[in-house]
Length: 269
Image (cartoon, rainbow, N blue to C red):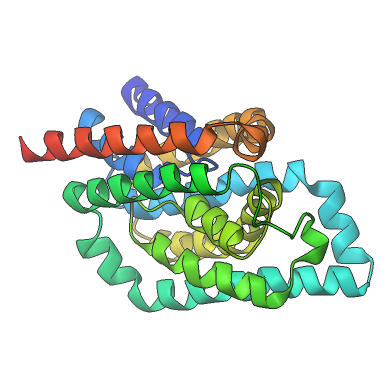
């Protein structure tokens, strides 16, 4: 068992556990980490997607009581929310299933990732200004989210097939544009991730389960444990930061722009 592999796996798990819930693109950070430490194997992209599904265990832990109530109590509100989540997840699943090979082959280049990092950062800076006080946001509880809102957020989430865009960023901004307050948009983004990333991660695991090497299994196993631990430790704090932080989107936007410029400079060397 290689100490170097375990070290790389731990770093991968820490990065994934923190970045999955922030609109800073976990894919971009893993691309950068791969450039610094070397590739994690031939199936790095599939391993990354699997780890995104592992991160969702922290969201399920955070919202366990809410999810149990929603799934077991048959009310109009709970049915509407479940439909909204389904309508939000389906567009990405369909487009991702059709285009996943193209994405893996052509869209993970550092130049493309850096471009979407910068573009997304600029969008978040504007979002921080226009939606700071929730003037235009009337949906102040997930109980008021309708399937049409979920579908609109799902259409925006399709942009997240481009590495560097950030799934959480696309869904939070989509929620705000649909009239959700920041806390509701963040909560819906987290809830929407559960069926989406879980199903996508299982699909990716099944597609490579027979070809992963021992080293790749080792990295994925250690990284999964670390990812769950880190995600559970930070997910609540990150929810508060995104929901109530005065200039949280501005700070994240600046960080994305700086990271994108740095990644572009590094890839051009």
